Image (cartoon, rainbow, N blue to C red):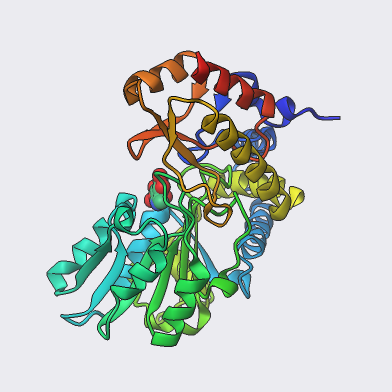
Length: 375
Ligand SMILES: Cc1ncc(COP(=O)(O)O)c(C=O)c1O
């Protein structure tokens, strides 16, 4: 019977509370990459047809994770930033249009919209700190007749605030506004349903909660708006009938593969396929139940510490895999160092310390973290 330590070897070395940054790989992922490396060295691409079956299987896993209507609605791209750039530079902007987002977003979800100002597009940013109780209503109030797109993260990377995507999606669909979701801090941590939230675009790299390698992201585009997005990258792999290299005229793939211009990241595909296998075999409902229980445990423990102030919204409907806190008496950098020195791998974010365990993190490790903070 495999133990948690044999399935997730990082458990043997440290207390890994940094899945919101880059996750350690499960053992099956390391095995898949090692087998792929050995095969490459031994026989190169002799068995490429098998690699293609792994790629197809990953596409189906991605469909399941997002509850997308079809696997072909999802492209395998480089990273979250690339997907957001596909959206920003694929739409037909008119001077005077605006994009609505959030001031505290990760840079990937701000810089690209700011870059559109040279085309006369305004980027309106909600300050989350001004609207802690109901950020969605405040966000929607920034929209007007010239709003073309709302782009936000499903979960804020600093404090783990989970947004009510369904509320925003419903508003966008009713008003004819496009809705773009950076789901990197949600996918793999909790269930996600792209149809229920009515997103037009969803993008997420695989190296956080999905437990994959850096450099391979899922990019969903709603089929009905595929043709609205101009292509900004070109190559053999994005064509319908991609194996016919002699075509003089080509047609972009009829599905989201049109955003994959060249050779796929087969190494990343093998890794993410193995990692998503772990999550989907557990079931995303169960993954979230277990992760949520760990967050509750941390919240209870942190609340019991007199010096500690929790910076995350602890309401259940706002919860994610992230809890951020600070000490009222110890400077943040000192507290961070104290945690590091005690084998706790976490991150300083949002003016505090960000903890991001995953569903497999043992409660005993969380108890140890709380003991470190209590001393
Ligand atoms: C909300 C959010 N978006 C995007 C990224 C990273 O983007 P990329 O996949 O382009 O590296 C991060 C990484 O921390 C993030 O927290």
